[in-house]
Image 1 (spheres, rainbow, N blue to C red):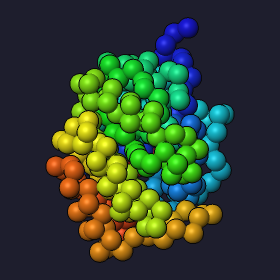
Image 2 (cartoon, rainbow, N blue to C red; image 1 turned 60 degrees about the horizontal axis):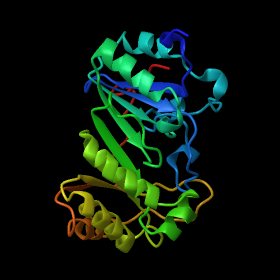
Image 3 (cartoon, helix red, strand yellow; image 1 turned 60 degrees about the vertical axis):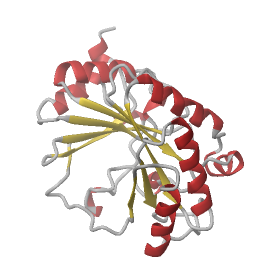
Length: 249
């Protein structure tokens, strides 16, 4: 089969013209995260609310590699972010990354939960979204164990890609002490791994609340005990409008 015609699990593409960054969304995940933002919307959350509504995009809307290449080749794309859902459950991920980098000369970034160790030969950056460090809490939140994730983080660190991590701060659940455990575990691999802490955004079906400003400061200070570079998103910044992001598919 011609690789240009392979089917992927990608279903949605957005583009930020000013930064020349495109986001490629993959359907499905091997985790069942209770606080997943996809429970609010399957489309890019930076799009205006009116463009986030509509039917769920499933298998019938999956894009072929040639469709993705054709869509992206019409824009000036310097960086391409493979995100989800979970991109690594797509068996053709490496082929797609190779094709897009080869044809478009993109800087490829992979956003993953870290449970599967993919071929990273055609990725320049990897960001692991860490859910929890404590095995019991990780299983409660995702349905899977955390040990495999942290074992793969060590592999990513040795692979030569630029590695960073993200986590979500959920007060009274994945709280200050748990974020500290995540930071400490990362430091055992490399204290130079940058960590971004995102404030939890409430999703349907869960009772957790958004963290307060003082709580965000506390959790950042906790993580900085172990890591050299810690940043945060408070979730309250004004959402970018349609002038800064476009849905290509």
